[in-house]
Length: 372
Image 1 (cartoon, rainbow, N blue to C red):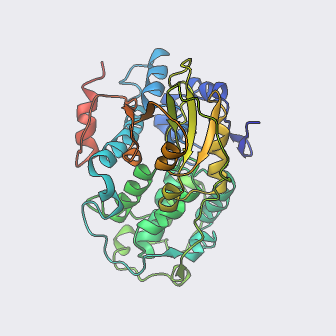
Image 2: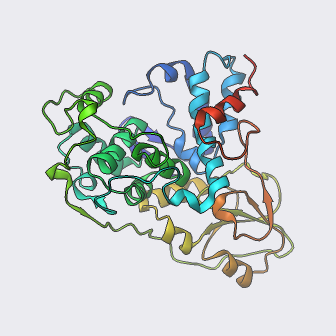
């Protein structure tokens, strides 16, 4: 049975038809106007994009087919392009995105996680409420992600990587490129300057009215701000993935084998082709990039849209040595480089590849593919 991931009126359905309906209901004009507010017209499609159920190209095509001109929805297209941009950096830079990409983050007081942030007890009401909801739903508004990253990296002076892993762990839309590189952008490791969240900005976009907090400061005061007492206690967290028990699967040696994973749950991929379809859950992958029980449940629920899918818990070489798999097909992804078989491309909005130092250099190339 498919599961609904619910936050009162906000749902994350897992059936293919409900996901397609969500694409059809996008209002890209409203999105461009109010997406930064916590009640803005965001699409709630990020979990499906990250899990490879749908692509940015598919979303753009759907919106343009409804008659919107690229000029009228440029901000919406740009925000979709950010996702492809992060992925292209991951493809180009590989493991380098796990370290400070452009600049060394400074200063650093800790490489662990701020306990009051993890416990939703920072004293900043909008942030604490958002974190409580985050644990329930697996979803965070993008502005809240930036606020939390700023609090952890720039106010508490934690190196970005471990707090980024904490957020990734709980996100239904867990995408290491988008997550890690966005945290680095906030921390100044992947940007020209740090992003600071102050109380006035939080109040504006979260409709809160707090005053006299440790963030109730002008931006110019942040660079020399001492770490507030409530953010000083740090520690490591239990970030482990509760993988299901490994069970035997059935492989027909006369058929090709299609591999699915955390980043490819596309039920339309090779639809109608008679094949073995295997969802590969590699313990080594989840040791390096752990996700929560909620995220894993979401993945398994989405996989039910794939006809005759079987779950294999083990490493890729174990699959090859244990079962008589013939031709193996899989979609390109930076974390699939140890797969052996026939690699197929992912769908991208635009034929723009490679590393661009800034998003706007990347976007300039992308725009050439749109008719204004």
